[in-house]
Length: 338
Image 1 (tube, helix red, strand yellow):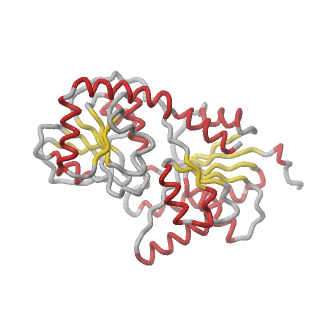
Image 2: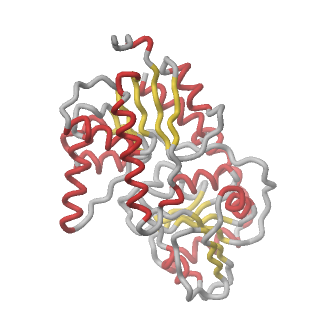
Image 3: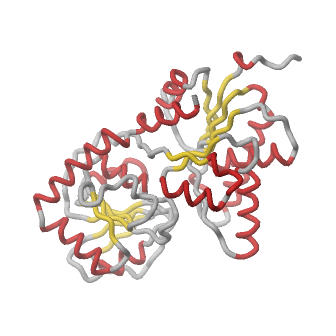
């Protein structure tokens, strides 16, 4: 049977999260990047803990294999989950297949690891991203692009910075219960946050399914089963949002920062490459070294300086509206894909 002409082919986005039937990314891509776009969804969030990670990566591989076997049906492919795209490129290169698709990899995060496994992991990523099958890799931090260019020199021209966006958080009344709220799992240093605030007058709530700590002080509460609307409710009524990070060279924390801004909440965060493109230091939040006295001083300012706090709330909401809404991100990506 004859293969489809390119004008008759569809385009595909592979994701690992829930979207509604009227996902705006599809509409924007259809208008700006042309062609019909379909979505392949495989949700894996319940497989992020312990041995289940193996199953998660097996599912990623299965998605990539399925797209590979049907590659002649598509013009453009977006691996919104990075391993969908990486595994697609890996298989294509190993099998020496003819390049027939334009492949974009999104949400790319890489951390150099130690030991034999780290060496093998680096070779896997390098083998995939340096192949002809990958056309571009979307990164959500400017400095991160420079770091990846050094790590993968054969793929230097493929790393593109696009500011991350997030869907508006709606249906919540904004209030202030005086609590410092922290959430997210990637690269977090909640031990530092607890140690910093354990003898302070501030109350802290940490929502993270993988963080376990039974020896927490009375002013700290840890929630291991708080998602979606419950999480957004806690954020909507907190005083500020804390994002303590371990590794300063890893891109992480942006989604939480944007969520906080969408609700008009200032953030205090570790000064890292992943957040410099999002948090306007002194305007929408504070950058801080991971030192107790620095964090305590800035947190105190957020509570004691009412004028500063109110101004930050307004600027945070405006920054989200003008720079970090999800549709703004989608339009930027659609322009790049063309």
